[in-house]
Image 1: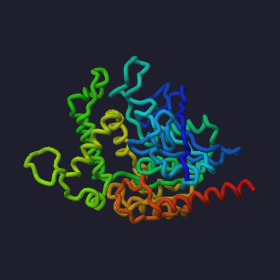
Image 2: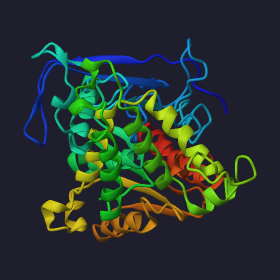
Image 3: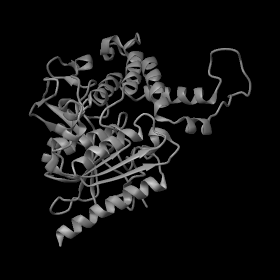
Length: 379
């Protein structure tokens, strides 16, 4: 197995305004994306990868001038990997509101000549899917072989199956859910409050002050990161290990787990935008496609046409196995073709990003069957 190698990000500008679920309009926006592999003649081998909270369009490979900047799902996508780019044309797209190239709060609002800041409209999973469909139109892809994602990316894949049922053959949702629990929403709000109450936030317009609400971002990331790990994983990696081997009877960093969380928070605050964090966590909160159907997920999924692969992880308490099983049951109630696995892995929610032989073999065998379908249709 090898990497897709050096890759180049591309961008497409859209002049047609996008009407959001909130009723707001985004005009003259840009989407940044990357592609890997070759699109076949009938454009039937395209797979769209949807990203999670702090990821981007950079799914696989590396940049020529940044060889250490490896795509966030490079272990999944590439030649000979579970999503094999020798067979499939893979697209990674950066969502609106992000801070990695697509139009977001950091960009200039053409109406004011200043960064959008707090004025950037709240976006939803459904809004992202609408914009992704427009990108597919530009690329001439009428139907995806699959739309795929983990966590928040899985929500987008699920939304694709409901909003554009005729435009995907397969929906692959890993470690995902059809709605957040109250506990999840609570964690997101605490993280947002850390940012909103940072004196350097300035109501979201901190760009004008030349500052970054780093303390808020650090705490937000630390809170989030705790929820991505399992107690088993943290216990095995850190336990109650002390950095110096003894207590100092103070409030500095003494335990290794504290040191790790501070490191993750510091790193995150150096590259992520605070307004983007607010937007994306709120999009997570709002996703609930069954809400218009009185909470009946079976009715919400009744119009789907795709085949489905869902996978969960036993130690993922943030997006639990029960959440995936609820989707599976609703799909089976609708007589959809569903493949599901609950993988016994110790890594918590982050397991969907890691290399696990059982998990990767599951995806590989499923995607191999997708390829056989494409070949059979071509013959």
